Length: 171
Image 1 (cartoon, rainbow, N blue to C red):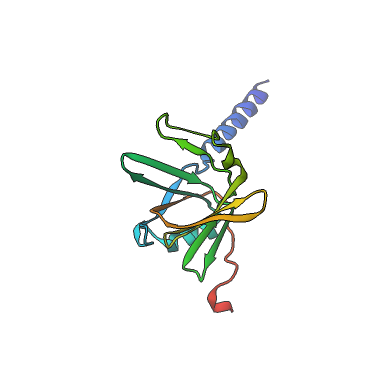
Image 2 (tube, rainbow, N blue to C red; image 1 turned 60 degrees about the horizontal axis):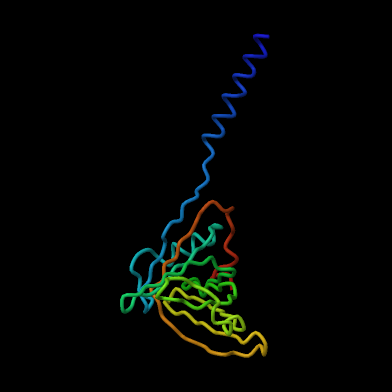
């Protein structure tokens, strides 16, 4: 009986020790913030690229303030690319955007015509933000708006190491 109790205590201690030593990084780390013109406020494109190649998840943030109003957006891209090992671009999932009621501070589809339009966007580390609205019935581009925003790029580490697909030297 004493041997079983000793084994139980040792096993319990090992389980607690292993549980305490396992930590998953669950916080987002700001790795790049750029001005509208793409110039760097903080962080580094090089670090962003290194983090992406190491398997980190990505989150983007952008927004605006004007005439006493502000709007902030956060998104996890569905597709990310690296151009010439210098710039990163990210596609967001297509969205059916709602209207904003600034008086009541809420978003809704009260304007039912918005449901017929799909928003697609690609965001770049050079500060550019290319958005198109597609008419879902005709599949034609309804509107295209080239924009520049202050952009914030966060990563969440913890992914498995991914090897660099290739380097410029290997071409």
